[in-house]
Image (cartoon, rainbow, N blue to C red; front, side):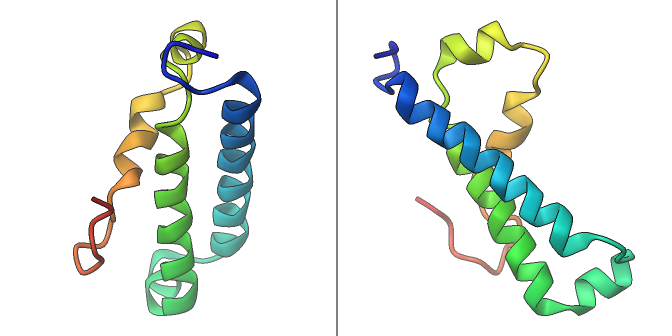
Length: 92
């Protein structure tokens, strides 16, 4: 186990989840301009939720993995753990 209490197998699942959530975001937003994206509430909500899930998963990646892969902007993803849309409930 890592010092953060997350086993290697477990954090690898979270990393895999982050990739899957990002792929969904790309699929949902492909070929849409901003007006079309914001006007499509289903895609908009699904995209926001997947960005939040990326942020939640990032918090499960151990510090030593983040440090060993410092070229990845980990903290940028962490901000997504909180709802992007202020109308949504907070995760805490």
